Length: 362
Image (cartoon, rainbow, N blue to C red; front, side, top):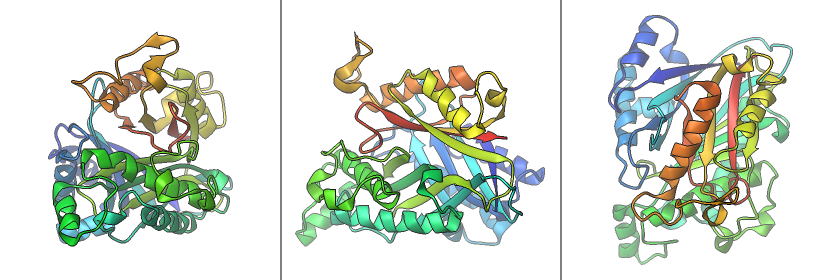
């Protein structure tokens, strides 16, 4: 396996010109595309339709190249979007390709992809979702050729949240939901998928979990999960990244934990962890191919002794504050604003902390 990583600029959610250009130039083989992870300029909420718009636009572009229907493209390629490009964050997508290659002789970037079955509204944010995600993560581990969970550095999960339509369906059937508020379902949905990752990788014992623990027992978490929820999905898509001795190529991935949204040192640590060297001193910054991070408001709104309004601002949701702040910090380190920063860290590191992963050419 050889994994390729390609950044694609998007001037709007319907702009596919950069991907078309790179395909026509021969730098991307459309038949090797297995996944995309990107940022759109929506609000990141339950009514953020830019995510589905972007998927539709890209699947329409790729359909004739692959001789498939647009619907079949979305079954073949995993599309993961996070809405909200506040501050300096640039709308884009990162395209992942996978091709045959001999092992490099050292551990290199590998990717495993798996999907759960479609979830019922009453299963979102519950132990059913935890177990379904855990099963899919184990499958992705096998596909990636990773034997040691310690070699996993980033697990991106995108799953469903509740929508007005799914809430109405559940109410007609008389079944219980974790909440009837679509936007309020995000913490449960993100939390359940993160705990599924934690269970599969041995970070949390399933015996300690229950429906009541989801979005409440924040002492239970994964350090490598990066989860999002959207109304455009019914199932969960799992993209697992790690380093495998069975992989070829010249890319590696590493991770670190951000202790807050201005933790510049953690950005460098993630890059160095991937490169196996000092990120600042040995040129690794120029070889960063992609960065993926979660952003969280500081506990109690206090950032290193200073009061912030992230948790009290009635006009701007805290996730948007956090994404903007962290995006600026990471961009100041790498010089590239095409980075994936997603808000909301339920069961993704300790409260106030957040995961960050970097892919580096070695």
